[in-house]
Image 1: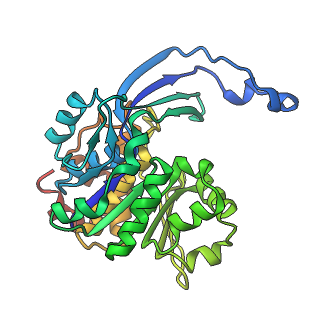
Image 2 (image 1 turned 180 degrees about the vertical axis):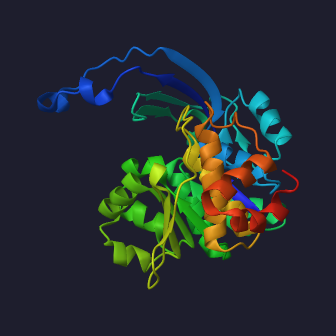
Image 3 (image 1 turned 180 degrees about the horizontal axis):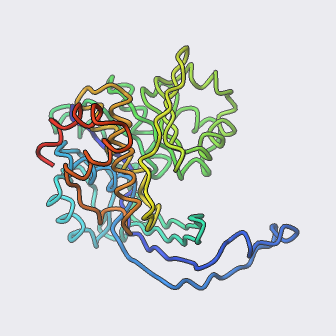
Amino acid sequence: MRIAVTGSIATDHLMVFPGRFAEQLIKEQLERVSLSFLADRLEVHRGGVAANIAFGLGLLGLDPLMVGAAGVDFAEYDAWLRTNGVDTCAVRVSETLHTARFVCTTDEDQNQIATFYAGAMAEAPLIDLAEIASRTGGLGLVLVGADDPAAMLRHTTTAHRLGIPVAADPSQQLARLDREQARRLVDGATWLFTNEYEAALLLERTGWSEEELLGRVGTWITTRGADGVSLTRAGADRLEIPAVPTDKIADPTGAGDAFRSGFLAGLSWQWPLEQAARLGCALATTVLESVGTQEYKLLASDLLARIGDTYGEDAARSIEPRLAGV
């Protein structure tokens, strides 16, 4: 199954604040916040949700098609992605704008405050997913990730019109969407990805109850950090998958994207949902232990050990044949 991953392509500027944001916020002054956090570490890395997810899929040998808009400075990033198994032929490269920037500060409780500059992403609505699908021989799944809202809506509409299953993943862009936009992005999705906070925000944005939303999507996957992942379908029991534990957390940025890479790989291999989610959790923990969203290495032995230790040796053996080439 050929997977197209649409969404942002960005450079991440990741900083660490050696304290707690909560201790700097004054409840009575939240309407007039003016704060500066002195960070003691800065890392500059490649990022963007489309690139992060595609990178993970590439390492797993899935030959993902990345769809998004990048800037005049994209050449080096492009070479990196292609080297790691990502097909970038569908990336629109701007002639005037720079690739998007994500600036994020993390405190010692792993809370984050971030700002995203769109840059070349403003040209994403000009991308024609139908033309790409025709040119590349067809698509089995389109993940619609955080991007320019107009591009997200256009890709969703096009995929539905072409009969291509959609994985809706609005994530950071939920805060910018109005009710009609939020509804259009998730209605009819085969897969819906959120974290716990985004799940609550999505219900608020759409105005739908959880039951109403589940009646409009296939499977709703909610990542819950150290508490693992839940998968919910209308009329079915909730499936809870525990996280792969670690005591070596370096940076939470990109862990959710890595989960999506592993989960989507499992779907491509036609695995049961539980098995796909376990691989996703193992990848997420791998990323947690590194700084940067694409700085990690995948080793089959490491993934199998994580899965075996958390879910049992039978779970590891069931996954092992597909990881032989990793």
